Length: 35
Image (tube, rainbow, N blue to C red; front, side, top):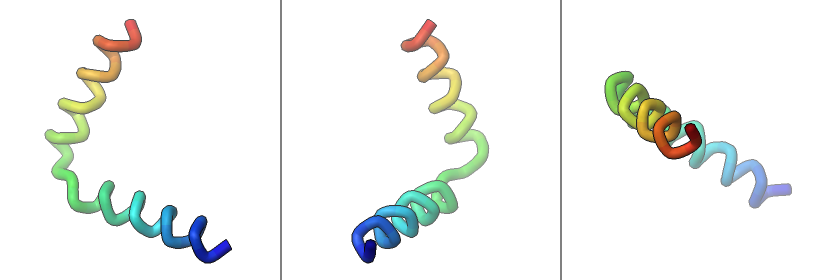
């Protein structure tokens, strides 16, 4: 239970540390890879 909470917090923190343009770049990359 505690591990899951920690993992969720880490994921949220990682998201917050990324700039919107970085997220766009990652999204474009994923779209290209999955296409």
